[in-house]
Length: 193
Image (cartoon, rainbow, N blue to C red):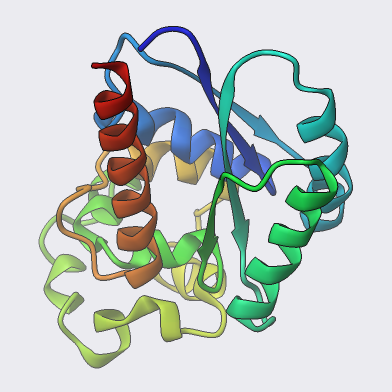
């Protein structure tokens, strides 16, 4: 199980900060992984074929990008084509809808704890219509700033990620990400036996 790495190619530093806190909750300690942040989606997309072609160590790649205002299926198709240009097709692609902050709004208890808000008040809103499906919010980053004006993407991501419950989140895209990682780990486990 130690002969390769999981390589996470990410759109931005705030996702890297989140995953570096979140992934140890999912990935066994005997499996190495690396999170590589880019300076936005254009930088990520330019980098994908180049990195995939140049990578000369055994690795499984996972690409995570925000959907923003684009069509999710088109974004995924575009990323698959970039992977093919890099001569790789066995890549896990996950899209945060619309932004990383959707994942945080899917677990308001984690937001409360991570940002040191008044405990109990915010988490009670989780089943309100707005927060039952945080992926439907057009601007989750702005929603989060409305809740906590002190929220900053990088430090806030790190703080909230500490408390994210991988088994209880209202964000569909977060849950799809977690399921994808678990499925990948199961396949790795089966192939190593």
